[in-house]
Length: 97
Image (tube, rainbow, N blue to C red; front, side, top):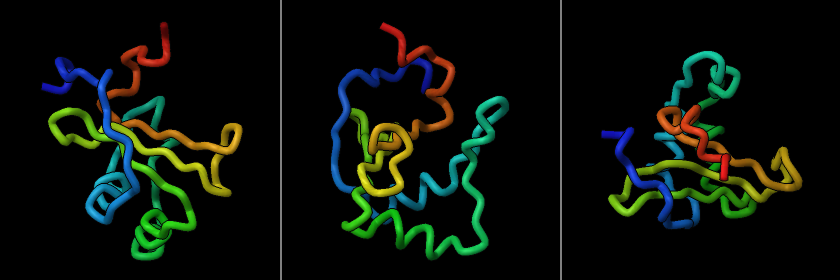
């Protein structure tokens, strides 16, 4: 199912609790496993991602499936923003034109 997903059209909206919980559970295979989130304080991680001051957003496709997230907050890693994609999208070449 995922390989046939059309991710060219996504909805961009503020992070919600359900999406943040899903993101915290994402598990990436090597070589992307460096992006796996691990925390001794998952409740704090969840609260951080849904707090409006931290500017986390979710991206969902036309079916409502969460496909990525981004942050424009202080923790943004690349030019003030961080983008994370669901594990099944990595390696597709989505960054290529």
